[in-house]
Image (cartoon, rainbow, N blue to C red; front, side):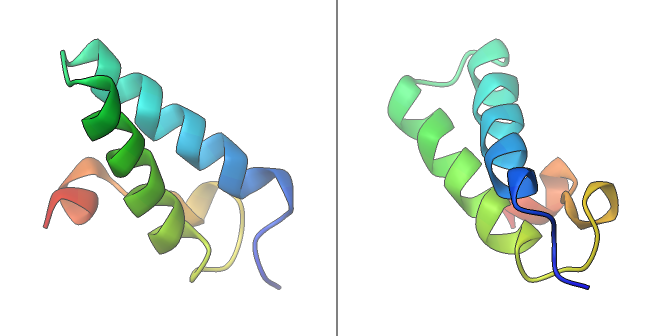
Length: 58
């Protein structure tokens, strides 16, 4: 089953907020959130599809 509809938005907001908390610039945090979301939507499930930071920064 593909990811649930709210999951991509949750992944984006989580990645965006985490990067802002790490001190990233807003544009960099947006890009991180976008990359995290792009990975997440290729996987099944809601929580299991959310990538770890190391996967996103590769």
